[in-house]
Every structure is written in structure tokens, then in C-alpha cells.
Length: 236
Image (tube, one colour):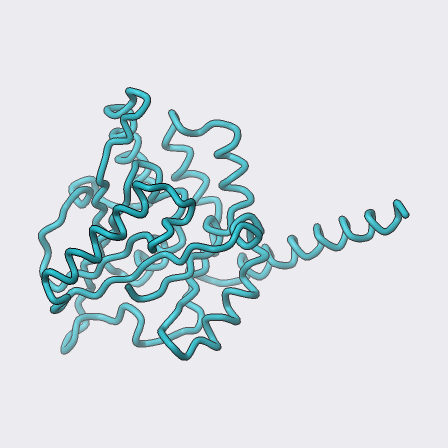
């Protein structure tokens, strides 16, 4: 009976390696399916867009949104980060704020573009209603953005949310590339895009900049979380 588990474990490791190889094979951060309608340049010219990433805590940008940030940066868009708190629950607010700036240095986001809100023709990226982990602060950010969009009639603001995955997909690491890509290709009700991070080491570097949070279980999360390797975005 033991040989069955050995074969199963070997198969799982092989599939993990194949999936990671698939992600690393992309020459650059990639959108699946490739679409000229996802975050195109501003209408009538080729200028880059301003994209506002709204998060609840310092380290959310690295732990959950690195594939999105790296994809948008590769397309020349201007990334701005609005963090809704300093994450001061343990009295480390000032430290975590500085760590956020260090992580943004790693992700090539200028410090002056952190916590900037007032931009015309703005695109917004944030959590969905579940907030990835069910964290109430993540959910509140989503609801706040929805309220803002409703109050302003959206207008020229286009908003996207990071899709929450079930626990099996969430901790499948690079394995989820296959199912997420299939869902993105087959979606007909609303546009869904899978953004592939072909350089997972950038996610590790950015998260490691949050030294106060870089404890053992977060290291494991970054290694095994599918959010390190891919982001699935859908319209708010």
C-alpha cells in the first residue's frame, strides 16, 4: 500500500515542477488570454495609464498583488499604491510603513507614488468581496471602493478586483496556472484575465522587505500560495 502513496507523492512533485516550469517559460509577465482590451493605453494615444492599487495593510501588495504589479509595470503603466492602514495592531505601524516603501523600491514603484489618490482617468485594482483570506479589512477595502464607484457613477474609472480562490487552489502554488488559464479562456459572462508572474523571486524579494512580517509561516505562504505565481482579475 505504501508504494501507492510514493507514486502519488512523486506525481504531485512532478506536476508541481512542470507547472513551475510552465510559468518560468514565459519571457515576460503575461496576460492569459492575451487581449488588447485589458488595460490598453488611453484612448486616442499611446500614453500609459495610472493604476491605483488599494490595499488594507503594508505587505498586501507583495503577498497578493505582485503578479499584477509586475505585469502592469512591464506594460509601462504608472502604479500608485494606496494603503488604508499602517498595520499597527502590534505597535509596528511606523516600521511597517517604512517596509512598504522598501518593498515598493524592489517592485520599482517610486516612493512618491505610494499613497497617491487624485489622478484623472484612473484604473483601480483591489480585493474582491471575500478579500482573499476573509480578512475584514480586505473586505472593507472592497466595499469602500464599490461605494466610491457607485457614488461617482464610475465615469472614466475602470476597476478590477483580485479573485479569491478556494483553499485548494489558494495553496496549490504554480499548479493553478492550468485551471485559471482555462477559466480565463472560457469565461463568457465577464472578462477574466490570468496574470502570470514569470519571476516569482521578485515576489519573495518584495515580501522579504517587510522584515517585521517575514516569519516562517509567511515564508511558507509565499512559497505555496498561488498568488505568488498568478493573479486572476475580474471587473468590479
